[in-house]
Image 1: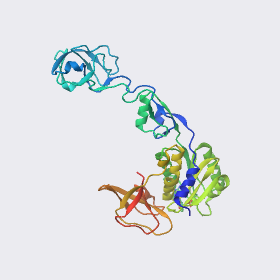
Image 2: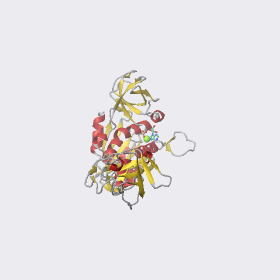
Image 3: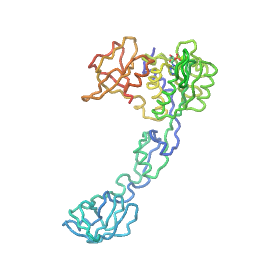
Image 4: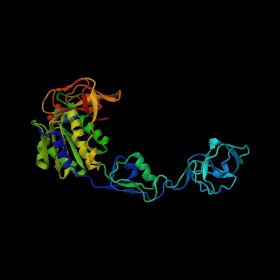
Length: 401
Ligand code: AMP
Ligand code: MG
């Protein structure tokens, strides 16, 4: 067996960063920029009002209350067709251009307009610049806005479009193919025949990929047949940036994924000192990373979490410190038992935040076939080799949700 960290390093060293490409901002959420974004224009583009109210000369309202003549109205989106002269005010709407002559805005709540709409009484004085948002107060021309290496959030996409930029250069989404293997697998609601089970890994893995910001590609369920698996993997690496297979990598007679990958790929076979997910195949087929994940449903999810997700995040240009989930500390609120076996265990746990700490309890049966406890888990609790943890013991957590 090899330590987890060594297996993770081998995987990461085989995952090359994808070639950058331009993408439309509406398709860019969660992707990582490769450019430095420099503001080509001012934001806001002009001095404008932050409030509905009246544009005034601050000197005119210094001795408020004072009554001013209304010289006109400026709506958002309109070019000002009126200036503010001495003793005058202009009605103005949030976002509208500050008219010439004015140096302050009085919000409408501090004013009273005469019945005929020609005069306004301002109740309070306001300082120069009151409620005026200056041109360039957010971004000035030539200012570095962000990037490279920024993970694009909705806010970043808003900034880009506020600058008139509708495309951005990024590391693209990894297109990742998923195929399950096994003669026992069936799809559909029909009654199962003896020995059959329903294929769940493929659907789980497709969803995990989508959650990880990849583009999942369903490559179907393959029989335990050498030629079929070889053809499936060859077709998969043609059209994908990476491939996940499930099943067929253990010591069984019909574990053909292992055999095929040995023939057509440059593979590492690892027995990792973890439970679940001890067996892992990883390597390159035609230069494309292929993750041979174990077939047991919990194992395939944990293996995805510990190996595939970090590798795919690296490929998509995420910063190195964010490839793996960062552990946080909690406390066992129930016993988390295990036996010494030379492995680190990843227990499926529920996590509750109470009294300023994460309180951790088992989420159910810990067998690698017991997917319902994985579904109920908020985190994987890292249990070092030994007898496990007692109530009150500190525990390191990989928070999944
Ligand atoms: P294997 O790694 O092929 O020996 O499979 C290990 C266990 O996982 C066996 O009990 C399989 O039936 C089960 N298994 C394999 N593939 C899947 C799948 N796609 N969905 C659910 N269970 C699976
Ligand atoms: Mg199998």
